[in-house]
Length: 499
Image (cartoon, rainbow, N blue to C red; front, side, top):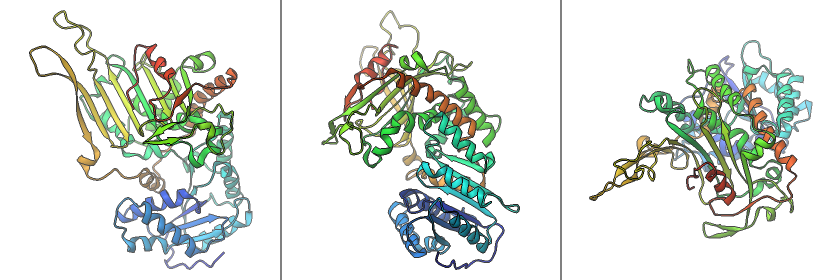
């Protein structure tokens, strides 16, 4: 390993971020730009050291050049302030080692001692298959211990691929780290628009009293993508939508939409309420899972004027694959607030638009006016929280159309983040990196939350496996999705919002 040149005096308030897998895309595209934005705003502790740990034969300078280019390419605020960036990179050092080589962890320990750092954040920016091995070696080197400071570890999703593997990984993490040292990252929770769900719900006296079964007919949570599987086909064909999106992103959005107001806004109180929601969701396994879910797979179609191949023709996808690229689910939260209100969740690839949103449809007025049809029937009140893109909130209302007859048409009132606050909201990694450094775990998932989410998901996976299907329903790329998903809603006398 090249010699580490320490330019700062020993500082008990200093922090070292150890990035395992620093040569991968995540460090270049997300982590380093996130650190730069926080440095630009003066939020980072000083001194801050970055220690990259990976097997490639890089030098300190090579790593710095790659991370520098990552900020230049993906930094949110342009132009880049090179003096701030240089200040970060001057304290960036590289350790060449495989993840299974114990001597590399000894070198890391020596480097931390030489830097005089008492606070260390370990960041697992590696494929999930390496998590357990890295954690075990950290424990064997006693790197997780620091009597005068703190040691924390950030674990990226996916956290396991089923309930059994999630519990196994959790056990290996807890063999080395205490729960309050573990930060399980789901970047969706770092999005400003996701955090605004709670602010909107509990900060507005207009809507908070209406947020219950008496006034809400149903909720639709959508995560639609125009992209196919791309370079992730090898992973995706073993995961599908149910593992890649449903178990984490969609259930996270559901818990935030359905949870009760926490007594205080801190990590324990917020996460307690989220876990209560997951524990309240109806049993969805066996025949109930088949009845309350729908899955499909895309075939060749047209996206943005270009013809795209079918899922089974993608590189690294098995020619007889029955991995779902589209999933819809109907869930019920069985508590006092939500009893009887369906939550419809859907996600799919190769859909016509990239959209993530939560749509809350309110109940209709019960009577037609003046003996006519229900005038509000074609103009339901819907509140749409758009997570991405075009972040904002839209409320659809019914208003009288001009003319001499009483005719109600839908109109909308819209709030845009870009228009209200200028520019685009901060990237999720900016917030989550800072929170992990200051020790705020509110936006990270807790052990019991992960277990409950996998408990629900495992019931669906097992039911699908027991079906033994040879082929799935299909939908053409670039369309609104499979027709079976439409029937899934029509059976409830409801309809999906157009993507």
